[in-house]
Length: 186
Image (cartoon, rainbow, N blue to C red; front, top):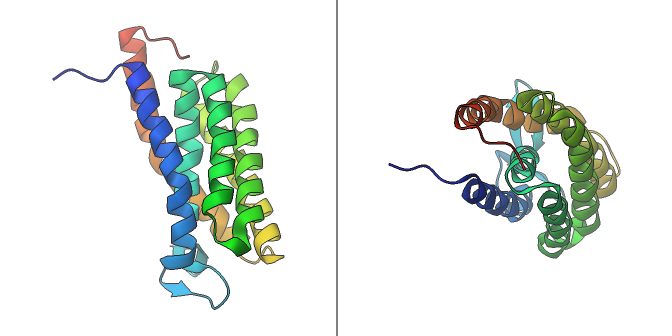
């Protein structure tokens, strides 16, 4: 069985990144163990800690953006962030349009700003650090703009961190495979 080319992997990461946006917007209003009237649907992310359900997809989006940059280059990653913010604004529930688009844009740009200089030091470090910065920016901006409160901040941070942490072993394997193949990131 042949494996995908780095470019094909980048295209798949780009598609996944794009799908995270509508999935997050749908989840926050439709899926959770509890749906707050006039508020988000919530899921447990730690014992006694709840978060709006869209956090899971946003945590994944932070990692996928890094992989888009690794495979396709910073131009593709920046373009994906801008397209993602526009898509987020189009697909978010009306009450969350501004919060969703602004939080997405700022968090993904922060992710890009941290990932880009760190990727030369190590892929796993870059993904972990950029994910950490991006998830905090996204959480604070989204919650404040959407709900005027940071009540769900711990849950937002924990939920997104779970997704970044779950992706790190995959990222490590990807880096090792790239080294064996002599693939230089875009």
